[in-house]
Length: 500
Image (tube, rainbow, N blue to C red; front, side):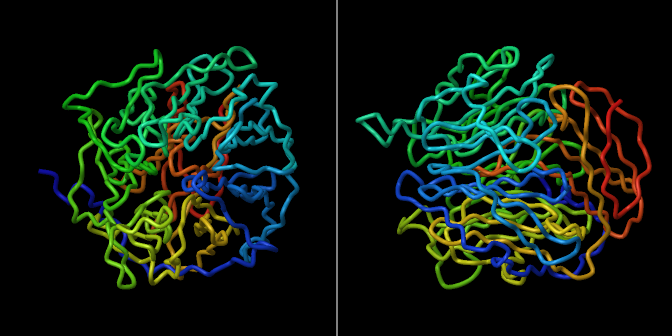
């Protein structure tokens, strides 16, 4: 039996309830993710520093409307503000993930589309050059809804996992006509032919992660049961060679309306737990290094129904992400919620969740107190400190409603630390590295990954809440397994740790 005590970090007392300020006016005009059936899913946002000024900039999908690129012009500690940057007529966009595709240390964007995906190569000033053809990437018109990437041994370019949804050209569709997904490996400075990830069951989230901490990254795919119906299931894949895990005691068959993956170590054992969003329960699983096991409902993260209003129908979860919003050294959980369109069996007024981790390791809903529980059809989201005040802010993309920007104004938050990694070679942001932070006898672990969430990703500093600690110890394990010694670090610092 799994006990809630496994989650207890018993470190810092609970701080003040979270408070967020609506900064919708941070953009000169509202931005809406729009469209019909072809954009029921998707609606992602990417946060990254595309001009080198250390402030996270924003790229948001638009669906039938043009995508949005906006530079962060917020003064340190001030009210969040963005100014749009021309990016051309980018329609059909479902989401985006920032990463350095070409190893030049400028952040790039892999843009997911219902149509030809685009690799936008950053020029270092928040302008981008379309490198799709130059990199040899596919030019077909699949409906892409998920993405993840990693650097395999000896490669200067990332291996890309691309998750495709329904094959809209199949006359027998849409039900039971999930398209093949792809694994695309680099060949020199370009990419080779796409290797089919088949069978594929309409993934809405993918994450490559070394969740066993044995140096072997694995690809997890969370699949939408609405279209694979009863044929499909949640999947795990080895990458080299590409091989699907067979159903076994260590990987039992699991079917859900898989929409998003959140992954982080919340137990302090160095192994990442996962939350899988769905219709109804948002499943949380603990990880012992061999298998994932569902935690009991009493943990408080299942968030099965709306917490406001009188709509008692089940919720629909999309993007999920762990983050420490009050810097109390306990990871909290944000879940974007919203009806697909007009699904009558599910809640229509479905507020987003802000689940704050308590001293006993359980989670308590604070979305209503924080003010972020709007009734819109939320989809993607991203979390970062947008105004350099040490508190994590929130961006939420809504379908058929304006994008939301929430500034964290929680009083009396704890201390914090932000860490970025840099290494020479084709993986300059050290994707696949693990950062460990030790506060007394408590361990906090972050793996640098690309993927997860729902069509949304970030390339920003790893943020640690420190509670009342004013110093800690930090250790980095680089992607090739090289481990640095522990080093002392001070609170309220933004560090870049560069590898020799």
